[in-house]
Length: 478
Ligand SMILES: Cc1ncc(C[n+]2csc(CCOP(=O)(O)OP(=O)(O)O)c2C)c(N)n1
Ligand code: SF4
Image (cartoon, rainbow, N blue to C red; front, side, top):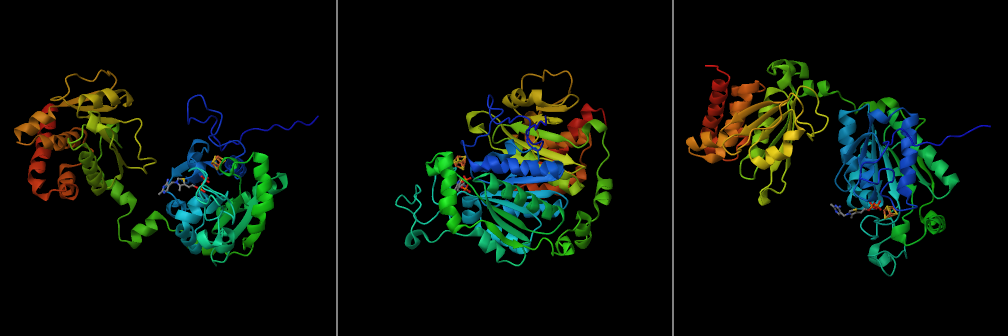
Protein backbone atom coordinates (compact mmCIF):
# COMPACT_ATOMS: atom_id res chain seq x y z
CA UNK A 1 0.00 0.00 0.00
CA UNK A 2 1.35 3.40 -0.95
CA UNK A 3 2.03 5.63 2.02
CA UNK A 4 2.13 9.41 1.85
CA UNK A 5 4.18 10.99 4.62
CA UNK A 6 3.35 14.61 5.38
CA UNK A 7 6.13 16.48 7.08
CA UNK A 8 7.07 20.00 7.89
CA UNK A 9 9.07 21.84 5.22
CA UNK A 10 12.80 21.95 5.91
CA UNK A 11 12.71 25.72 5.35
CA UNK A 12 10.90 25.97 8.70
CA UNK A 13 12.78 25.67 11.98
CA UNK A 14 12.48 22.36 13.75
CA UNK A 15 10.98 24.09 16.74
CA UNK A 16 9.88 27.67 17.19
CA UNK A 17 11.78 29.34 20.02
CA UNK A 18 9.36 32.23 20.35
CA UNK A 19 8.05 31.37 23.79
CA UNK A 20 9.04 28.56 26.04
CA UNK A 21 6.38 25.87 26.12
CA UNK A 22 5.06 26.91 22.71
CA UNK A 23 7.76 25.42 20.54
CA UNK A 24 5.48 23.68 18.07
CA UNK A 25 2.84 26.29 17.43
CA UNK A 26 2.76 29.60 15.66
CA UNK A 27 1.25 32.75 17.10
CA UNK A 28 -1.47 32.92 14.45
CA UNK A 29 -5.17 32.59 15.36
CA UNK A 30 -6.90 29.36 14.33
CA UNK A 31 -7.87 29.51 10.66
CA UNK A 32 -5.62 32.49 9.87
CA UNK A 33 -4.39 32.66 6.29
CA UNK A 34 -0.80 33.58 7.18
CA UNK A 35 0.01 30.05 8.32
CA UNK A 36 -1.20 28.54 5.05
CA UNK A 37 0.82 30.96 2.97
CA UNK A 38 3.92 30.39 5.13
CA UNK A 39 3.62 26.69 4.40
CA UNK A 40 3.35 27.22 0.65
CA UNK A 41 6.37 29.52 0.64
CA UNK A 42 8.49 27.18 2.78
CA UNK A 43 7.68 24.18 0.60
CA UNK A 44 8.55 26.14 -2.53
CA UNK A 45 11.91 27.18 -1.03
CA UNK A 46 12.61 23.53 -0.23
CA UNK A 47 11.83 22.47 -3.76
CA UNK A 48 13.98 25.20 -5.30
CA UNK A 49 16.76 24.29 -2.87
CA UNK A 50 16.79 27.98 -1.99
CA UNK A 51 16.54 27.96 1.82
CA UNK A 52 20.15 28.97 2.40
CA UNK A 53 20.07 31.85 -0.02
CA UNK A 54 16.70 33.29 0.90
CA UNK A 55 16.23 36.55 2.76
CA UNK A 56 12.71 37.08 4.04
CA UNK A 57 11.67 40.59 4.97
CA UNK A 58 8.98 40.39 7.64
CA UNK A 59 6.50 43.23 7.89
CA UNK A 60 4.79 45.05 10.69
CA UNK A 61 1.47 43.29 11.09
CA UNK A 62 0.36 39.86 12.27
CA UNK A 63 3.20 38.18 10.36
CA UNK A 64 5.83 40.29 12.14
CA UNK A 65 7.14 37.10 13.78
CA UNK A 66 7.72 35.21 10.52
CA UNK A 67 11.39 35.14 11.51
CA UNK A 68 10.58 32.65 14.27
CA UNK A 69 9.41 30.13 11.70
CA UNK A 70 11.44 30.42 8.48
CA UNK A 71 14.94 28.96 8.62
CA UNK A 72 16.26 31.59 6.20
CA UNK A 73 18.00 34.95 6.50
CA UNK A 74 15.43 37.15 8.23
CA UNK A 75 15.03 40.88 8.49
CA UNK A 76 12.18 42.59 10.28
CA UNK A 77 11.73 46.08 8.95
CA UNK A 78 9.76 49.23 9.62
CA UNK A 79 6.09 49.34 8.66
CA UNK A 80 5.62 49.29 4.88
CA UNK A 81 9.33 49.45 4.09
CA UNK A 82 9.88 45.85 2.98
CA UNK A 83 10.19 46.75 -0.72
CA UNK A 84 12.96 49.28 0.05
CA UNK A 85 14.78 46.86 2.33
CA UNK A 86 14.37 44.08 -0.23
CA UNK A 87 15.80 46.39 -2.88
CA UNK A 88 18.91 46.98 -0.81
CA UNK A 89 19.36 43.30 0.01
CA UNK A 90 18.87 42.17 -3.56
CA UNK A 91 21.32 44.70 -4.90
CA UNK A 92 24.11 43.69 -2.56
CA UNK A 93 23.22 39.99 -2.69
CA UNK A 94 22.04 39.60 -6.29
CA UNK A 95 22.04 35.82 -6.09
CA UNK A 96 19.80 35.71 -3.04
CA UNK A 97 16.08 35.00 -3.18
CA UNK A 98 14.68 38.13 -1.58
CA UNK A 99 11.08 38.06 -0.47
CA UNK A 100 8.99 40.94 0.84
CA UNK A 101 6.03 39.57 2.79
CA UNK A 102 3.41 42.22 3.48
CA UNK A 103 -0.13 42.72 4.74
CA UNK A 104 -2.63 45.17 3.27
CA UNK A 105 -2.13 47.78 5.98
CA UNK A 106 1.60 47.41 5.52
CA UNK A 107 1.80 47.39 1.73
CA UNK A 108 -1.20 49.41 0.61
CA UNK A 109 -1.47 52.04 3.38
CA UNK A 110 1.74 53.17 5.06
CA UNK A 111 3.95 51.46 2.45
CA UNK A 112 1.93 52.48 -0.63
CA UNK A 113 4.62 54.53 -2.28
CA UNK A 114 7.36 52.06 -1.33
CA UNK A 115 5.73 49.23 -3.25
CA UNK A 116 4.90 51.42 -6.23
CA UNK A 117 8.47 52.60 -6.61
CA UNK A 118 10.03 49.16 -6.19
CA UNK A 119 7.58 47.71 -8.72
CA UNK A 120 8.20 50.58 -11.10
CA UNK A 121 11.95 50.04 -10.87
CA UNK A 122 11.34 46.40 -11.71
CA UNK A 123 13.43 45.19 -8.78
CA UNK A 124 14.19 41.51 -9.14
CA UNK A 125 12.33 40.61 -5.94
CA UNK A 126 9.25 38.62 -4.99
CA UNK A 127 6.42 40.23 -3.06
CA UNK A 128 3.73 38.26 -1.27
CA UNK A 129 0.85 40.55 -0.46
CA UNK A 130 -1.63 39.21 2.07
CA UNK A 131 -4.96 40.93 1.55
CA UNK A 132 -7.28 40.16 4.46
CA UNK A 133 -9.19 43.44 4.08
CA UNK A 134 -8.34 44.63 7.58
CA UNK A 135 -5.56 45.56 9.99
CA UNK A 136 -5.42 42.25 11.86
CA UNK A 137 -2.68 42.90 14.36
CA UNK A 138 -4.01 46.09 15.83
CA UNK A 139 -7.55 44.81 16.35
CA UNK A 140 -9.39 45.13 13.07
CA UNK A 141 -9.20 48.69 11.78
CA UNK A 142 -10.08 49.59 8.19
CA UNK A 143 -7.39 48.90 5.58
CA UNK A 144 -7.20 50.34 2.06
CA UNK A 145 -8.63 47.01 0.87
CA UNK A 146 -11.62 46.97 3.24
CA UNK A 147 -14.79 46.37 1.24
CA UNK A 148 -17.59 48.92 0.93
CA UNK A 149 -20.05 48.30 3.73
CA UNK A 150 -17.54 46.22 5.71
CA UNK A 151 -17.67 46.95 9.41
CA UNK A 152 -14.34 47.46 11.11
CA UNK A 153 -13.42 49.10 14.40
CA UNK A 154 -12.80 52.38 12.54
CA UNK A 155 -15.82 52.02 10.25
CA UNK A 156 -18.42 50.74 12.73
CA UNK A 157 -21.27 51.53 10.32
CA UNK A 158 -19.45 50.05 7.34
CA UNK A 159 -17.02 51.60 4.86
CA UNK A 160 -18.62 54.20 2.61
CA UNK A 161 -17.37 55.70 -0.63
CA UNK A 162 -18.08 59.20 0.59
CA UNK A 163 -16.18 58.85 3.82
CA UNK A 164 -13.36 56.38 3.20
CA UNK A 165 -13.20 55.97 -0.58
CA UNK A 166 -13.19 52.76 -2.57
CA UNK A 167 -11.24 49.56 -1.88
CA UNK A 168 -7.76 49.69 -3.36
CA UNK A 169 -7.05 47.09 -6.04
CA UNK A 170 -3.38 46.43 -5.68
CA UNK A 171 -2.94 43.71 -8.33
CA UNK A 172 -4.68 45.91 -10.89
CA UNK A 173 -2.57 48.96 -9.99
CA UNK A 174 0.79 47.18 -10.03
CA UNK A 175 0.01 45.39 -13.27
CA UNK A 176 -0.49 48.76 -14.99
CA UNK A 177 3.20 49.56 -14.54
CA UNK A 178 5.55 48.58 -17.34
CA UNK A 179 8.32 47.05 -15.26
CA UNK A 180 6.73 44.21 -13.26
CA UNK A 181 6.94 40.86 -14.96
CA UNK A 182 4.25 38.93 -13.12
CA UNK A 183 1.22 39.93 -11.07
CA UNK A 184 -1.45 37.45 -10.01
CA UNK A 185 -4.27 37.47 -7.48
CA UNK A 186 -5.02 34.18 -5.78
CA UNK A 187 -6.90 32.98 -2.71
CA UNK A 188 -6.54 30.38 0.00
CA UNK A 189 -10.17 29.59 0.57
CA UNK A 190 -10.49 25.99 -0.62
CA UNK A 191 -8.20 23.29 -2.01
CA UNK A 192 -8.62 24.42 -5.63
CA UNK A 193 -7.66 28.02 -4.88
CA UNK A 194 -4.90 26.99 -2.52
CA UNK A 195 -3.34 24.89 -5.27
CA UNK A 196 -3.44 27.93 -7.56
CA UNK A 197 -1.76 29.93 -4.82
CA UNK A 198 0.88 27.21 -4.53
CA UNK A 199 1.62 27.53 -8.26
CA UNK A 200 1.70 31.33 -8.11
CA UNK A 201 4.10 31.30 -5.14
CA UNK A 202 6.43 29.05 -7.10
CA UNK A 203 6.22 31.11 -10.27
CA UNK A 204 7.01 34.33 -8.41
CA UNK A 205 10.09 32.78 -6.82
CA UNK A 206 11.19 31.09 -10.04
CA UNK A 207 11.00 34.41 -11.90
CA UNK A 208 13.43 35.87 -9.41
CA UNK A 209 15.77 32.90 -9.64
CA UNK A 210 15.78 33.40 -13.40
CA UNK A 211 16.45 37.15 -13.04
CA UNK A 212 13.20 38.10 -14.72
CA UNK A 213 12.33 40.99 -12.44
CA UNK A 214 9.51 42.05 -10.15
CA UNK A 215 6.75 39.59 -9.25
CA UNK A 216 3.82 40.23 -6.92
CA UNK A 217 1.26 37.69 -5.74
CA UNK A 218 -1.79 39.11 -4.00
CA UNK A 219 -3.26 36.47 -1.73
CA UNK A 220 -6.88 36.90 -0.65
CA UNK A 221 -6.68 35.70 2.91
CA UNK A 222 -8.87 35.41 5.98
CA UNK A 223 -8.79 37.05 9.38
CA UNK A 224 -11.41 35.14 11.39
CA UNK A 225 -10.57 37.02 14.58
CA UNK A 226 -10.73 40.50 13.07
CA UNK A 227 -13.82 39.66 11.05
CA UNK A 228 -15.46 38.02 14.07
CA UNK A 229 -16.28 34.87 12.12
CA UNK A 230 -15.43 31.20 12.33
CA UNK A 231 -12.71 30.05 9.94
CA UNK A 232 -15.33 28.36 7.75
CA UNK A 233 -17.53 31.47 7.63
CA UNK A 234 -14.46 33.57 6.85
CA UNK A 235 -13.55 31.45 3.84
CA UNK A 236 -17.09 31.67 2.53
CA UNK A 237 -17.04 35.42 3.03
CA UNK A 238 -13.95 35.74 0.85
CA UNK A 239 -15.59 33.85 -1.98
CA UNK A 240 -18.93 35.61 -1.65
CA UNK A 241 -17.75 39.16 -1.10
CA UNK A 242 -14.04 39.64 -1.78
CA UNK A 243 -14.02 37.79 -5.11
CA UNK A 244 -16.49 40.33 -6.54
CA UNK A 245 -14.25 43.28 -5.82
CA UNK A 246 -10.92 41.49 -6.08
CA UNK A 247 -11.37 38.86 -8.80
CA UNK A 248 -8.63 36.23 -8.68
CA UNK A 249 -6.64 35.85 -11.89
CA UNK A 250 -3.43 36.64 -13.70
CA UNK A 251 -3.16 40.39 -14.16
CA UNK A 252 0.16 40.41 -15.94
CA UNK A 253 2.55 37.70 -17.01
CA UNK A 254 5.52 38.43 -19.21
CA UNK A 255 7.61 35.67 -17.65
CA UNK A 256 8.00 33.84 -20.96
CA UNK A 257 8.95 36.80 -23.12
CA UNK A 258 10.95 38.90 -20.63
CA UNK A 259 14.54 39.50 -21.68
CA UNK A 260 16.64 38.22 -18.79
CA UNK A 261 19.47 40.60 -19.55
CA UNK A 262 17.16 43.50 -18.81
CA UNK A 263 17.04 42.41 -15.18
CA UNK A 264 20.75 41.75 -15.13
CA UNK A 265 21.52 45.38 -15.79
CA UNK A 266 20.77 46.10 -12.13
CA UNK A 267 23.43 43.75 -10.90
CA UNK A 268 26.74 45.33 -10.01
CA UNK A 269 29.38 43.66 -7.95
CA UNK A 270 30.80 45.51 -4.97
CA UNK A 271 34.11 45.69 -6.80
CA UNK A 272 32.40 47.31 -9.85
CA UNK A 273 30.96 49.97 -7.58
CA UNK A 274 34.29 50.50 -5.82
CA UNK A 275 36.12 50.99 -9.08
CA UNK A 276 33.45 53.41 -10.37
CA UNK A 277 33.75 55.47 -7.17
CA UNK A 278 37.53 55.24 -7.21
CA UNK A 279 37.63 53.35 -3.91
CA UNK A 280 40.50 50.87 -3.55
CA UNK A 281 39.48 47.23 -3.90
CA UNK A 282 38.61 45.20 -0.84
CA UNK A 283 41.80 43.18 -1.26
CA UNK A 284 43.97 46.33 -1.20
CA UNK A 285 42.12 47.65 1.86
CA UNK A 286 42.33 44.29 3.62
CA UNK A 287 46.09 44.18 3.10
CA UNK A 288 46.41 47.46 5.01
CA UNK A 289 44.61 46.18 8.11
CA UNK A 290 47.09 45.58 10.95
CA UNK A 291 48.25 41.99 11.39
CA UNK A 292 47.35 40.86 14.89
CA UNK A 293 47.66 37.64 16.87
CA UNK A 294 44.92 35.17 15.98
CA UNK A 295 43.17 35.52 19.37
CA UNK A 296 42.59 39.26 18.88
CA UNK A 297 41.52 39.05 15.24
CA UNK A 298 38.10 40.26 14.09
CA UNK A 299 36.86 41.27 17.54
CA UNK A 300 33.18 40.88 18.39
CA UNK A 301 32.74 43.21 21.30
CA UNK A 302 30.31 44.06 24.03
CA UNK A 303 31.12 47.37 25.70
CA UNK A 304 29.19 48.09 28.85
CA UNK A 305 29.03 50.54 31.72
CA UNK A 306 26.60 52.99 33.20
CA UNK A 307 25.07 55.98 31.44
CA UNK A 308 27.48 58.92 31.32
CA UNK A 309 30.65 56.84 31.05
CA UNK A 310 30.79 57.33 27.30
CA UNK A 311 30.33 53.66 26.52
CA UNK A 312 28.34 54.31 23.38
CA UNK A 313 30.92 56.83 22.21
CA UNK A 314 33.71 54.35 22.84
CA UNK A 315 31.85 51.98 20.50
CA UNK A 316 31.41 54.69 17.89
CA UNK A 317 35.10 55.55 18.16
CA UNK A 318 36.15 51.96 17.60
CA UNK A 319 33.81 51.66 14.62
CA UNK A 320 34.88 54.97 13.05
CA UNK A 321 38.55 54.14 13.42
CA UNK A 322 37.86 50.58 12.30
CA UNK A 323 36.24 51.89 9.14
CA UNK A 324 39.26 54.10 8.46
CA UNK A 325 41.47 51.07 8.89
CA UNK A 326 39.47 49.11 6.31
CA UNK A 327 37.50 46.75 8.55
CA UNK A 328 33.88 45.92 7.97
CA UNK A 329 32.29 47.40 11.05
CA UNK A 330 29.00 47.53 12.90
CA UNK A 331 27.85 49.34 16.01
CA UNK A 332 24.50 49.04 17.71
CA UNK A 333 23.61 50.69 20.96
CA UNK A 334 21.36 49.32 23.66
CA UNK A 335 20.04 52.09 25.80
CA UNK A 336 18.94 49.71 28.55
CA UNK A 337 17.84 50.67 32.02
CA UNK A 338 20.96 52.62 32.92
CA UNK A 339 18.85 55.29 34.63
CA UNK A 340 18.07 52.66 37.24
CA UNK A 341 21.69 51.75 37.88
CA UNK A 342 21.93 48.97 35.32
CA UNK A 343 24.11 48.87 32.27
CA UNK A 344 24.24 50.80 29.02
CA UNK A 345 25.89 48.75 26.38
CA UNK A 346 26.71 48.54 22.73
CA UNK A 347 27.83 45.84 20.36
CA UNK A 348 30.75 46.42 17.99
CA UNK A 349 32.17 44.26 15.24
CA UNK A 350 35.48 44.98 13.52
CA UNK A 351 35.88 42.31 10.91
CA UNK A 352 38.06 41.48 7.95
CA UNK A 353 35.06 39.56 6.60
CA UNK A 354 31.47 40.64 6.06
CA UNK A 355 29.53 41.15 9.27
CA UNK A 356 26.59 38.73 9.30
CA UNK A 357 24.74 40.35 12.18
CA UNK A 358 25.53 43.44 14.22
CA UNK A 359 24.26 41.64 17.30
CA UNK A 360 27.04 40.17 19.45
CA UNK A 361 25.76 37.27 21.52
CA UNK A 362 29.13 35.56 22.07
CA UNK A 363 31.71 38.33 22.48
CA UNK A 364 35.41 37.76 22.01
CA UNK A 365 36.01 41.00 23.90
CA UNK A 366 34.11 42.43 26.86
CA UNK A 367 34.82 45.92 28.12
CA UNK A 368 33.15 46.34 31.52
CA UNK A 369 33.24 49.79 33.05
CA UNK A 370 31.11 49.02 36.10
CA UNK A 371 30.30 46.00 38.27
CA UNK A 372 26.75 45.33 36.96
CA UNK A 373 28.25 45.08 33.47
CA UNK A 374 30.85 42.55 34.54
CA UNK A 375 28.20 40.60 36.44
CA UNK A 376 25.89 40.62 33.45
CA UNK A 377 28.24 39.82 30.60
CA UNK A 378 31.20 37.91 32.04
CA UNK A 379 29.73 34.50 31.29
CA UNK A 380 28.99 35.35 27.67
CA UNK A 381 32.64 35.83 26.68
CA UNK A 382 33.94 32.97 24.53
CA UNK A 383 36.72 30.81 26.03
CA UNK A 384 40.02 32.38 25.06
CA UNK A 385 38.35 35.80 24.85
CA UNK A 386 39.46 39.01 26.53
CA UNK A 387 37.85 40.85 29.44
CA UNK A 388 38.94 44.42 30.00
CA UNK A 389 37.58 46.09 33.11
CA UNK A 390 37.90 49.36 34.93
CA UNK A 391 39.66 48.27 38.11
CA UNK A 392 39.12 51.65 39.77
CA UNK A 393 35.37 51.03 39.88
CA UNK A 394 35.08 47.26 39.92
CA UNK A 395 36.20 45.71 43.16
CA UNK A 396 36.42 42.14 41.99
CA UNK A 397 38.43 40.42 39.27
CA UNK A 398 36.56 38.36 36.68
CA UNK A 399 36.01 34.81 37.91
CA UNK A 400 36.58 33.08 34.60
CA UNK A 401 39.86 31.19 34.31
CA UNK A 402 39.51 30.43 30.59
CA UNK A 403 39.77 34.03 29.37
CA UNK A 404 42.45 36.68 29.33
CA UNK A 405 41.91 39.55 31.74
CA UNK A 406 43.25 43.08 31.44
CA UNK A 407 42.60 45.39 34.41
CA UNK A 408 42.87 49.09 33.71
CA UNK A 409 42.36 51.70 36.47
CA UNK A 410 40.75 53.87 33.81
CA UNK A 411 38.72 56.18 36.05
CA UNK A 412 41.69 56.83 38.34
CA UNK A 413 43.93 57.65 35.35
CA UNK A 414 41.21 59.88 33.92
CA UNK A 415 40.87 61.72 37.23
CA UNK A 416 44.60 62.39 37.16
CA UNK A 417 44.10 64.02 33.76
CA UNK A 418 41.46 66.23 35.36
CA UNK A 419 38.30 64.72 33.83
CA UNK A 420 36.66 61.44 34.84
CA UNK A 421 34.76 61.36 31.57
CA UNK A 422 37.83 60.47 29.49
CA UNK A 423 38.11 57.05 31.15
CA UNK A 424 36.54 55.61 28.00
CA UNK A 425 39.37 57.01 25.85
CA UNK A 426 41.96 55.57 28.23
CA UNK A 427 40.36 52.19 27.68
CA UNK A 428 40.37 52.79 23.92
CA UNK A 429 44.10 53.58 23.91
CA UNK A 430 44.95 50.64 26.16
CA UNK A 431 42.87 48.22 24.09
CA UNK A 432 44.41 49.13 20.75
CA UNK A 433 47.92 48.99 22.12
CA UNK A 434 47.34 45.70 23.94
CA UNK A 435 45.81 43.90 20.96
CA UNK A 436 47.19 45.81 17.97
CA UNK A 437 43.76 45.77 16.33
CA UNK A 438 44.05 49.48 15.39
CA UNK A 439 47.04 51.78 15.16
CA UNK A 440 47.42 54.90 17.24
CA UNK A 441 47.59 57.01 14.05
CA UNK A 442 44.24 55.66 12.77
CA UNK A 443 42.47 56.26 16.07
CA UNK A 444 43.85 59.78 16.49
CA UNK A 445 42.89 60.59 12.88
CA UNK A 446 39.36 59.37 13.50
CA UNK A 447 38.99 61.19 16.84
CA UNK A 448 37.61 64.50 15.47
CA UNK A 449 35.00 62.51 13.51
CA UNK A 450 33.44 60.82 16.48
CA UNK A 451 33.83 63.46 19.15
CA UNK A 452 30.92 65.85 19.09
CA UNK A 453 32.57 68.56 21.20
CA UNK A 454 35.54 69.64 19.13
CA UNK A 455 37.03 71.59 22.05
CA UNK A 456 37.47 68.24 23.81
CA UNK A 457 39.73 66.77 21.12
CA UNK A 458 43.05 67.69 22.80
CA UNK A 459 42.12 66.16 26.18
CA UNK A 460 40.71 63.02 24.59
CA UNK A 461 43.88 62.68 22.52
CA UNK A 462 45.95 62.85 25.71
CA UNK A 463 43.69 60.22 27.30
CA UNK A 464 44.15 57.85 24.36
CA UNK A 465 47.92 58.32 24.62
CA UNK A 466 47.73 57.70 28.37
CA UNK A 467 45.91 54.42 27.74
CA UNK A 468 48.54 53.41 25.20
CA UNK A 469 51.31 54.22 27.67
CA UNK A 470 49.58 52.19 30.40
CA UNK A 471 49.25 49.15 28.13
CA UNK A 472 52.90 49.46 27.10
CA UNK A 473 54.02 49.44 30.72
CA UNK A 474 51.83 46.42 31.42
CA UNK A 475 53.35 44.63 28.47
CA UNK A 476 56.85 45.75 29.53
CA UNK A 477 57.34 47.68 26.34
CA UNK A 478 59.27 50.93 26.52
C1 LIG B 1 5.02 53.26 11.92
C2 LIG B 1 3.92 52.43 12.50
N1 LIG B 1 2.65 52.84 12.39
C3 LIG B 1 1.64 52.11 12.90
C4 LIG B 1 1.91 50.92 13.52
C5 LIG B 1 0.78 50.10 14.13
N2 LIG B 1 0.48 48.92 13.34
C6 LIG B 1 0.96 47.70 13.68
S1 LIG B 1 0.41 46.49 12.65
C7 LIG B 1 -0.50 47.60 11.77
C8 LIG B 1 -1.36 47.17 10.61
C9 LIG B 1 -1.10 45.80 10.12
O1 LIG B 1 -2.07 45.43 9.21
P1 LIG B 1 -1.78 44.54 7.94
O2 LIG B 1 -0.59 45.04 7.22
O3 LIG B 1 -3.02 44.48 7.14
O4 LIG B 1 -1.35 43.13 8.53
P2 LIG B 1 -2.19 42.02 9.32
O5 LIG B 1 -1.98 42.32 10.77
O6 LIG B 1 -3.62 42.14 8.90
O7 LIG B 1 -1.56 40.74 8.89
C10 LIG B 1 -0.36 48.89 12.25
C11 LIG B 1 -1.06 50.08 11.70
C12 LIG B 1 3.26 50.53 13.63
N3 LIG B 1 3.60 49.38 14.22
N4 LIG B 1 4.24 51.29 13.10
S1 SF4 C 1 -5.74 38.72 13.89
FE1 SF4 C 1 -6.33 37.95 11.87
S2 SF4 C 1 -4.48 38.17 10.59
FE2 SF4 C 1 -3.88 38.29 12.73
S3 SF4 C 1 -3.28 36.23 13.33
FE3 SF4 C 1 -5.43 36.50 13.91
S4 SF4 C 1 -6.57 35.77 12.14
FE4 SF4 C 1 -4.48 36.09 11.46
